[in-house]
Image (cartoon, rainbow, N blue to C red; front, side, top):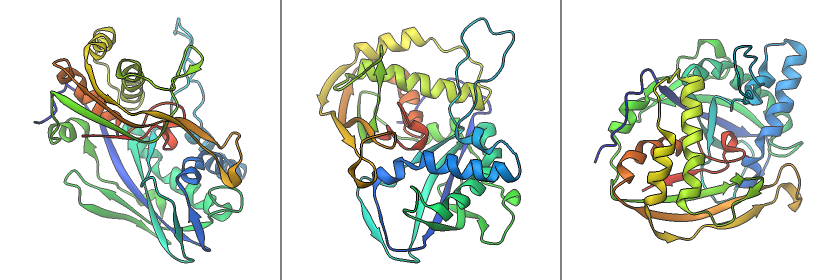
Length: 308
C-alpha cells in the first residue's frame, strides 16, 4: 500500500552516485567508508586555504546566528546523507571503480558542485591519511523513475551539473509498505544517546524520537517545511506499537589498524519488527529516515537502515 503523508510542499532530494577509481589495490571496508568525515574536512580545509568558499561548513555546518531566537540555537546537520553500499569488505584492484551514493536535500542540492570538489580533493590523500586513494571519474544521479542520468564526467565543469530532482511526496506515494507490520533492519551502527548515555538495546519507542527529529530537522532546515507536526502524539503512538521481534545488539567498528578513537564507530545493528494500528501515521517518517540515517554520524553513513 502507498505511504500516506501530510502535505510536504516543495520537499525534494537528489540521489547522487559518485564513481571513484582506486589508485592502488585497496581493501575497502564499511568502517573505512563510515570514517570519511575527517578526510572530507581535511580536503575542504585545503581547498578553502586556496579559495575561501565555505567548504568546511558544508561538511561541518556552523550554528546559525539568529538574534530573534529565544532558545538555544542548534547546529544543523549537513545537507546530505551517505547511503552505505553494504556490510561487506571488498578488495579493489588498481584502476577498479566503486560507486558511492549520497542523498542531497532541498536547497542542499545546490552544494553538489562544492561537495564534488571536496571529494575529488580527498582522493589525493585517501579516505584516511594515505589509505584508499582514488580519482573521481564520474557522477550520476537517479530520476524519479530510478533511471540513472550522467551529470558529470572527468574534465567537465562541476558547476554545469544539473541533477534530477525527486519530490519527497511522489517518492512516498510510490512506496509499497505494510501499515500493520514493519521490519527495520539496521546495517550500520546507530549510536543513539539519551540523557548522555548510549542506548545498547533500544526498543522502538526509544528509537522513534531520533527518527522523528532527523526527518523534521532536515525538512525544516533545507526544504522550508513549515507544517506543524504533533511530535508528542506521534511519540505516544510509537510507544503503543507492539514489538514482535528485537535482535538489536551493540557493535564497535574499529577504524584503520583496529584502533579505537575518533574514527571508531559504535552503535546498534540488527532487526526490529513492530506492528500496530498507529503504524499508519508513523510510516512516512520511518520511510524517509531510511534515506537520512539516524544517530551520531548519520550524515556519513552511521545508523543506516532499510524498511520492509
